[in-house]
Amino acid sequence: MRNTSPGQRPGVDREGNRTDRRSDRAENRPGTDRAQNRNDRVENRNDRRDQISNGNRPDRIEDREERRQQRADRRDEVRDQFQDNHPRYDFWKDHPDWARFRWNRPYRWATWGLLTGWFPGYGGGTTEYEYAYGENIYYQDDQVYYGDEAVATASEYADQAQTLAESAPAVDESSDWLPLGVFAITKDGEDSGPPPTLFLQLAVNKQGIIAGTFCNTTTDKTQPIEGMVDQENQRVAWGIEGKKWPIMETGLANLTKDSSGALIHFENGETQQWLMVRVEEPKTEN
Image (cartoon, helix red, strand yellow):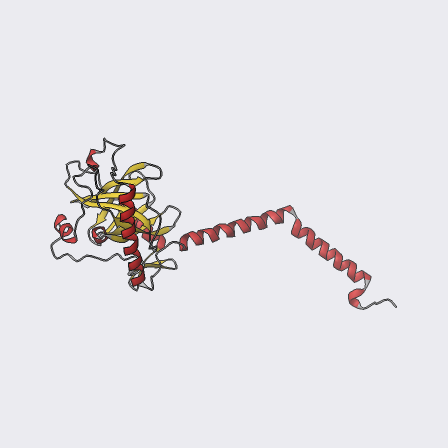
């Protein structure tokens, strides 16, 4: 005997099949596919932006002693690598016309006491502000915190650094310059890694203008940099001369340390935490 329950009646089956086919055709129409694909691409782009925005930033470090030990270990390794790979290193070998960047003894560095006596507005008792990225300055969600206080959004903080770097006035060629040293730049949070290929040579004048040289040994390219010190909050930011991004920043007192953290802000909104390691003048061969 044929089963004629409502769910199995031929008419219901046919109507159901027609409905299913209409639904299938609607879902498979080219316009619908394109719209869905566009939505998928937008979502994917947003996901990538979120990953860029939230990745590589200095989140709050839970184990500070471990991070400080990592930095000390990496500092010692970088210095050895620099001496092994660059026994007679010269930033200016391909740019003899950059005379103003060839300060006497560019590998010399300044102590905090020397810096406080360098700027006319500072005194011997000027307090140094600590820029300890991942410790007292860190990113959480889309906010940048100083201590427990949110001080800016991530994009605002990067824009502040870019504005500071661009605020440097034209350099007076007769300026007196204080060498701040030569630094290797390497990833932060690692106690060991490959030999660094990025180097900075920095100096500051009494106006707070930062100048110097950036060198990429992988490309064998050397470029001048410019930037500025905010003498009120001791924030320092610089970039390659003539370029808006990327911008590198750190604290003024950080530039007196053997190794210290720094931030690099990129045009796409990404911010990365890096480690600056002061390197000693290479030993010249007799």
